[in-house]
Amino acid sequence: MKYNTFVTHLECSLSGNRYEKDFVHGLSNEGKPLLVRYDLEKIKDVISKDYLTKTEKHGFWRYSFLLPVEDTNIISLGEVVTPLISLENITKKLNYTGDLLVKDEGLLPTSSFKARGLGVAVSMARQFGIRHLAIPTNGNAGAAMAAYAAKVGIKCTVFCPEDTPEINIREISRLGAEVFKVNGLINDCGKIVLEGKEEVGWFDISTLKEPYRIEGKKTMGLELAEQLNWELPDVIFYPTGGGTGLIGMWKAFSELQQLGWIGKKLPRMVAVQAEGCAPIVKAWRQGNETAELWENANTIAAGIRVPIAVGDFLIIRAVNESKGFAISVTDNEIIKARDLISKTEGTLLCPEGAAT
View 1 (tube, one colour):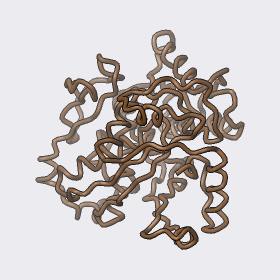
View 2 (view 1 turned 45 degrees about the vertical axis):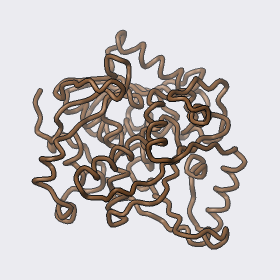
View 3 (view 1 turned 135 degrees about the horizontal axis):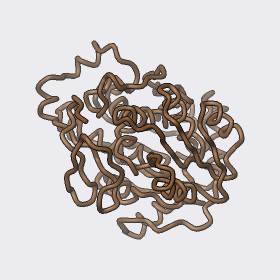
């Protein structure tokens, strides 16, 4: 299957081995995530920043020249550019210097930043003619996948930990997906999805087990750079579970640098995890490149309750390359931060966002 984008090939994130762009891929032969590579020199020749002021595309699809989806396969559910909210009152209250900003991803379809990754990944499934997708989820990713898949009639099967809130289960089900509760955590759900690839024949669209969710998530970085007039912040605190967003933003900044759209200064990337599930923090503090399975994971921030991440080494690599760090916070600290920001700024954060 041929398609016309600026994609040149896919690349194993560990070995650097190349993979053809025109075929369906999961992980590399080494069992590691694949990264999409683009002809950045060609993009440089034909597209400038001015393009973004003229394009008729909306939301994260405005950056389609740095995405793998053909225009005819784009699935859109009314995406918007999500706002940056200044926490001025908190800054004064805590005697901080500088600007403290929150990016409000709740305005995306299904009210979650997961729409970025799943919007691109499901559009790529459409491009490749895939008719059945499966995903493990703590809630939001399942809803985002189901919504985009419903738009084009792709079948969805979703596996959730048994303590997933009923409101999330109902949302996913109402969007047409088949939902199963699993006695375990998200990694246990992931094992079922993996086993079903052969038995049922669905495509595994789990975090970083296909190449395209990271491309959608990187649009957070592209959008952030544009909103700040191509001057990146000093530090980005990111709630980290599977880590696709942190990895994706770091990839976005690298691509923008190569295009000459931003300067040499890059933000320090900070991976924030809950104390009750902090495998990345533990690995980073120990100086390890990969993380071990976190036993008995437990936190109110279910969206970052990921005991083991397939892209652990990519998260740690981004943190180290950016001279950032990894930090864990207690559930009590999350609750206090959420309450303080809501009562001081009028901004309601989910537990995952409050962790940062």
